Length: 94
Image (cartoon, rainbow, N blue to C red):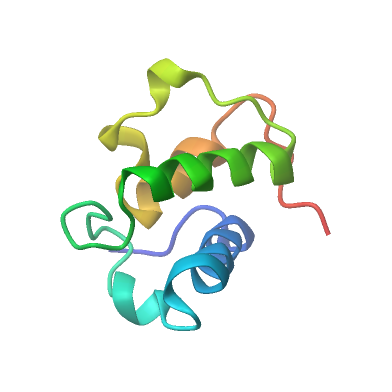
């Protein structure tokens, strides 16, 4: 598959995973941007909650709970695609 739609947002998620769960190994653990985070142990349910809170705070967004589904958040590509398409998303702040 091709690259994700927002490389800066992709890197933000990877950096957060490195800092909080995989200690510099997030890209190796993820392996492929389409790989399921839940099925492959990238994040557990508590980790998803922490990631969502981080994204909301860092990006100044409010993520609607009804959209917090595996269809939108179970892989790196799904997260980047969903978040970057939100009306309030203005890119990753410097």
